[in-house]
Amino acid sequence: MRFLGLAVASWSASLSLLAGTADAAAPRPGKPLVIVADVDSEIHAVTASFVGRVIHEAEQKNAVAIVLRLDTPGGRLDSTRELTRTILSSRVPVVGYVSPPGAQAASAGFLVLMACDVAAMAPGTNTGAASPVGGSGEDLPRTMKKKVTEDMSALLRSVVVPRGRPIQPAVDAVEEALSYSETEAKEKKLVEVVASDLTDLLKQLDGRAVKRVGKPDSVLVTAGAIVKETEMTGLQRALAVIASPAVAGLLFLIGLVGLYSEMSHPGAILPGVLGGICLLLALFALSVLPTNWAGIGLMLLGVLFFFLEIQLASHGLFAIGGGVSMILGAVLLFHREEGAPRFDFWFVTVAAAATAAILAALSFKALSVQSLPVTTGEGALVGQVVRARSAIHQTGRVFADGAVWEARSAVPVAEGAQVEIVGVEGLLLLVRPAAADPGVTAPKAPERTA
Image (cartoon, rainbow, N blue to C red):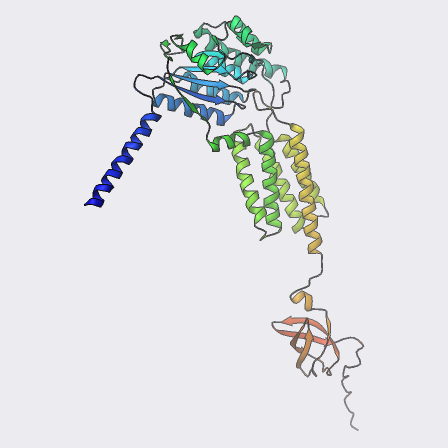
């Protein structure tokens, strides 16, 4: 009974400790909750998924506001639209805050800032420069640029007008690629608040009436709010790094080299394992990037050509075709579409050329190994000239490759004579007398009778 009482007491104490921890983690009654999340990378599918999770958490915990700290050079237009839809559909007011000093909300980041219910900036930050460009930062063709510019301008008008922000400065950031400091943005009424830090921001937000799109206006109550920082998970951060065109292309090329090495040298294991992992990671990244699947097909075809170079005698034609396919695949790997992440075109192309050179070297190395004479097995025995260990009358013994073998000859052979191995039948060697060997017993001519 004493032990039972101690166990119950210990269990009760544990429950009390857990309850106290939970109470400390949860907002206290009467204390508003503000959730803060950082968007500090290019905007892509991982970013949109992360912000969606933050908004869902805020709605579940009845937070009074969400603060998105923005520091982004831009990103994909389709992911920006998804992120904008998520912000506009949030039941909790969303505050876009360009911070810390030196940060920017450029290009697609400007669209995200304008989509927020409250736009705020820290001193020493800038926003704007939202003109659409291609995936490598190059100008778009005239017709395409006009089409995308009009589309982005319409999106901006749809989110700034309901909030009382001026249309022209916002549209100029798209059509004229204008960029604004925090002071200029405040003067032009593109942002409502300039705050030195998060504490200052929450102080200025308290009691502010917020104009929402498609929802009733609300008043923010942030005085004494509990701030909960929400970060990307380790997996999301890793995926955000991988979802870079240069990294994705490099992983894909490493994966191809690893798998090719495993196919051409079965049993190596390590190249196949690393290649498979890199290839799967690359396929994830390519699924969230503007990928041209024709480019992937060409690169896979290049690997197949290199493999065929080993199997078939093409005198290097398959290797040349493989190199051309790899380089063309790299050139076509990513669409240069509007709003896509910028990537170093030459980096991916040079990496593909280097990969093609590595695969060609591996192929020719495998061919040189195949052309070496066979040193083991039946192929190594046939053609050898050895001495007979015993006289061979139909069968006998010879010494070959460090062992004594049973041998059979159609012609009698004297002990010590040289014989040539002409075949192998299981553990029996087929031999014949070596040419011009004095130990060969010549058959006698038949006697004539009168």
